[in-house]
Image (cartoon, rainbow, N blue to C red; front, side):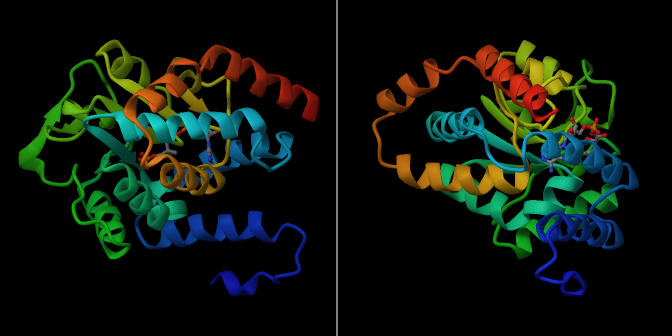
Amino acid sequence: MTNRIPLKHPRYLSLKTREKLVDGLKNGLVVTHGLIAHGRGEAFDYLLGEHTSQNALCAEKVASCLLLISKTPVISVNGNAAALCSKEIVKLSKLTNASIEVNLFHQNQKRSEVIAKTLIKDGATEVLGVNSKSKFAMKQISSGRRFVDKSGILNADTVFLAIEDGDRTEVLTSLGKTVISVDLNPLSRTAQSSNVTIVDNIIRAIPNMIDFAKKFAKNEISELSALVSQFDNKWNLVQSTKLIRHGL
Ligand code: PTJ
């Protein structure tokens, strides 16, 4: 599918990314709303210069360290994230010992299973959030995202999520969980209420996090904790917003 896009096209990467989502839609991973969400993300990415800023890179480093020091980290996967970065999500989960859980806004058992199969095909040994017997409904969340896995998000100390509506981040942080998010919009509710917000495109953010997870894998927990505690998310969000204003 993607080879229809000429390699020399100046917007090759952007068009290839769109194709991945369209393929994801055709293959049952992505919902139509996911295409709209991607369009919103693209607009912010355009203003950010379609590259990883220094402060996003710093957030990615801190996020990797946070996953490495967490006891029960979970990577929450939705349709868009799976269509864009399934292989990379699996790699990051292995490097940081994080569980992978499918969690959807537009809840649908069949789509959850298709996403889980894709992750397993890409190397995941286990994918949570699919077995209805281990699901728990969090009453504080009104959307389909309330269904979490008892041995996954419900029990997690850190939740890594991406490309998400703002419904549950506030709830997760209010329950004492640490939330890392990837969101190109620094003004979104998810971005504003996360502990570490990565204002970057997921297609760049996760590969960078993989590199950091490899780099810091053998460091002492105390060193990683020090890096994490120095991070100021408010400052990070202000810098990201300034970059967008500059882009305008
Ligand atoms: O698969 P489901 O059912 O869980 O549904 C997923 C969608 C994406 C449809 C759902 O979570 C949704 O409606 O999300 P929103 O409210 O549109 O929010 C998505 C956020 O992600 C927006 O702030 C976008 O700017 C941002 N975004 C979109 N694409 C990317 C992104 N951030 C990082 N990387 C991207 N590629």
